[in-house]
Image 1 (cartoon, rainbow, N blue to C red):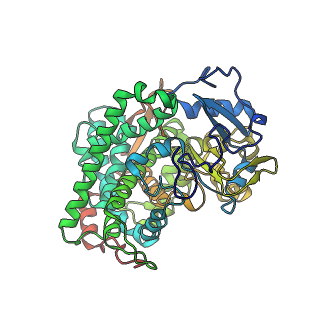
Image 2: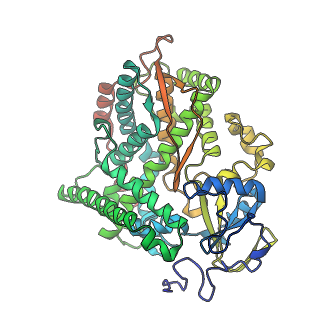
Image 3: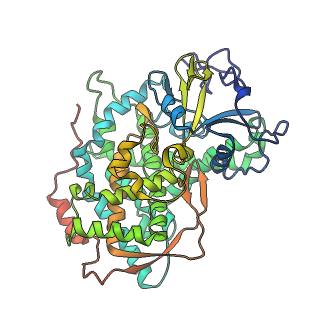
Length: 515
């Protein structure tokens, strides 16, 4: 097996360790599911379509640390709060790029999300791009977020007037794709003018689905079992690359006179200390990373939150009252007004607790160590933290941990909990760089929708979750009633007012920061 430049094999294990050992000397002591089959492993009662939800079910049976085997691969899962806190120690553990994340490297390479720890482009890109998510930069994105939200409500107004239900996951995907494309790269995919999702989304979903499928078949048989899927995946990757290359080429042809956005930073900004710049190939990988990661998880978070708001009208009413009180009749709420929606933010956090759209993250030992004072790990050994089960740990969240309750996130409750018990964005230095962007966007959009509509669920709908590395409600549709009784102007910014604000606002204040 080939080795990487830092003396590890491509699966992240140190030289000399067999993959089956995983660097866990006492692996056999860890509990595992019953009914293990030769060659196939722990597949009885499991589905290749829902590996994360199967792991949540096993976690309830087996406890805070356990193992699963599938097609000769052994995986260690952790969800106990104390063990997770140990894994969050940056001095002893680091991000592990494995499983489906490593399967995305053919498209994202050494982008921020998929880079191995030893690859220098991660630190370079992080240092160059971090100012693009500063408070000042976020305020510059706000007006564009409002404009995209206005396109969503235009579409929902038409559906409401026609008595049609809205496709929540599909529309949230359109919204978040347009938001990251506009704010980060000055591009408009025209998603709301299309009857179907943009081909970029179709190709992206294809690559995510294929990455997950690779984990559900025996590696030696994958070339045969996934032959057709592999060809489709290659075509999807080629389409994504062409789309991004065209976007970058257009910006370059403009002579660098861009919008001061993330793409400008990638193309024009040198590292403030080393003077290094991102290579053209890495720029492509970073753009794809942001377009995919920057909208896929946020669309899921919005969709789950809207599901819970529709299912809990008392919560929706309380959140709506907060929006009405803080925003009043203003047509276009300001950036600072979004941060004041503290209860609505609790709704979002509670949705992410129950269904973190990035459902797990992997951690590897930097050196030989002992996890939780009990489980020896050799350098390079890794474990997968089940965020969805960590967020349901009854020792942290109580015996009613499955119940939706936004007040779990009031300030007093948050202060009373131990650190590292809520991890929807990963942990440590490699945690999601765009988490504040996502939270601001999602809180803004939820506020606008609650102010404009009453949400009516399908009484026969039962939450089903689809998995494609990220999580998303499946088949979620809502009916809308336009709010009129409050005497408010409709609860979404007037498009002309937003355009006027945009014309008078400074350009996105990212250019030059940190140069």
